[in-house]
Length: 93
Image (cartoon, rainbow, N blue to C red; front, side):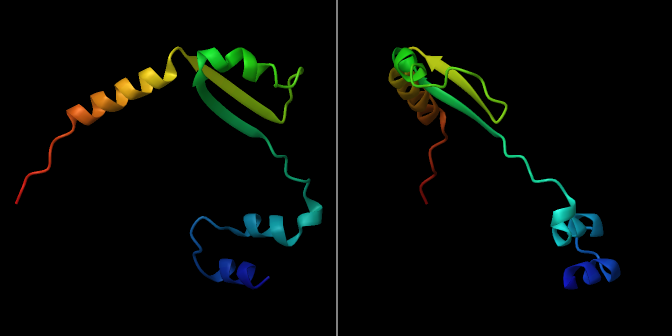
């Protein structure tokens, strides 16, 4: 209630009275829904093994994007080396 009283008389940035009422009167609002989203980059030789552990049916509660990269370690190392070789060296003082 104190924060709501402050919001009436002063600027609290992105916080407004409707936001505060959502928490002050929490029982008047529906329960929040949790949804999870993720992306995984894995070596293509692990895809079959890892996907065999995945749930058999889809769920509205989560989304997973799997990106399979052949020879992931070699690709990662090549990209890292390319970036390292293109950086500007520090000037000595």
